[in-house]
Length: 214
Image (tube, rainbow, N blue to C red; front, side, top):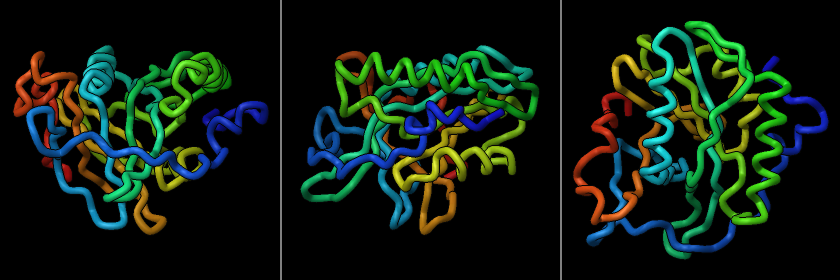
């Protein structure tokens, strides 16, 4: 079953209060974040931290013959100049799922583990422990949302600041999907580097980012 139990629905369905005002990561200068693909108008810009994206890609590599997935944690904020944006600052692999080659189901235990993780981490950083999206893989069959995927997104990730990330570990491709005028659309994103010292900013995380699907 994909539906979370009644005791856990607040994790998925509770609206986030008015976003905290804070500037988004810099888009210019030495430590600039890097745009990948095109962010359509009326879509909230997606900022994902490079170490988080690396974790997603590494977890995606665990299976080439069945889907795996997880949860994207962070929050949405309001930049004083540019308006609202989504920031993904943590990733939790989904445990106790049932999956095959072309589908993934979140179980009662999956949602319970998510609930426990958010409760444990919220005290440390409450502004970065909201459920802002989900991730899953399409091993060898490309970047898109199937009908089953769209059902999950429409029912459990239906806030304008909630996104989906699809990774094809065989083709080494990925793509974000988000809400635009009540429709789910393919979207670009912004990668926030871990540090200018550790990586060359022009290099993609593990050379795995492709903009072919944006």
